Length: 590
Ligand code: ATP
Image (cartoon, rainbow, N blue to C red; front, side, top):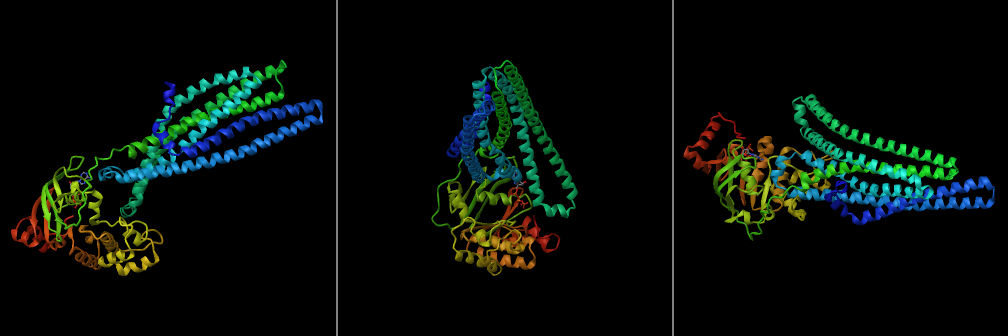
């Protein structure tokens, strides 16, 4: 039973096995360094005996013997220098490689997880797993080191005690089970407390990130004090859980030390009694004190081991439950790749329900002819973004099918499908590198000429030339200061680098000034001419420019047709448009 409790979690073991070579090297060095430490105690005993002898004989020969003992001690410590150096270096390398490997695997897994996962999780909490939890996890290597170093030191010291006075070793044997029980009792509580510490730290990380991202909103609303107070409350909760864990460590450590000291004093008393009866020399007594202290150190190491293990276990639980063990959805990607894409998009009777049960689309059917554009129009929550997400296969339709050139997209290779779609999101997101790096996202091999061509098409070549020549980063202190319209045009260029046959645009022009809007609209108009375009139109004036319009409400198609057709029909779209023309309605549907 006890044995089972102390067994290392197989997941932690597996991670450590990934660095087997370095760990074996590091642990061999640890064992030799600890063994040498133990043998140095024997040599010190010998040195003290030599000293005792000199005091009695005053003979030069005894002084020579003492010199040899001294040299041997120096020799042992020189050897130990190399092994301790090896131990420190190899284990540090194992830690660095283990954490790097783990972070890489975590990101690989995160990138495989479906969009729904990110809908449900807070970015800061995920980030905390990659930073805080991985940092704590690296102490697993320290556990391995301590689990060799601490007992080995204790064992060597115990052998020395047996050699000097076997009766005294009994006291030490008596202490072992007492210490074991105390350490074991604490371990479970520590694990729970440590897990809570990591959860609270993740919450703090998540909120920190959100506050930093939303700093403009916080300032605009004058909410600094409010945010500060909420943050303070959160920090207080985190402090409480840290203190709970600290209390457990604080109780265990001195208790182990106290028991060790009691054992040490008991042993010294017995030693004094033995010396009284002439059965023990002063040198033996001194060597015994060293040995008992080494045993004490060993116990302290073992008690640390249990608290460190608890934190590693807590971190490992989160690393696995939050990311690595999250099941991937069944592999939906087909294998089919189309030779040439015409760009005919068809939605046939598509319905979609989000995992939380929200009906987003009901029996939606429409088609977009190759090379034409369709505007998705409708009030907020109508299902426009959901249609765009389904086309990119971020989700699978609950019922119905989507076709590209007559092929059900569920049979198409999902990466290939996405590479055929150029996406310009509503909120432009650029990475921190230079403009060229941003343009090469997803197309790392694109030539400089391809990038220039894309920038020309997006009407972004003029202003970006200088930044590109100097490779100025897009964000950061020394970064390019781009206006909203310029960012949008870079985003359009990014979508065009791969020369997609389909464009998916989320209209962002509403956020731009008149000048920028003109430039962005002109850029879009040109690039849409040769491609099938689906765009989410938040404004009726933009929608009117599309070849056809899909008017949605609460997930259902209300009307579809060209602007002229819909106006002639006199339905809801025409009523809205008339209200807008008469100045009764703003040109923004949300
Ligand atoms: P907007 O113009 O405001 O962006 P939209 O027309 O694009 O709105 P969708 O975002 O597609 O509308 O949302 C359609 C419906 O699905 C809404 O009722 C919305 O609340 C719901 N919805 C959207 N995303 C999720 C989600 N991740 N989980 C649950 N329900 C969602």
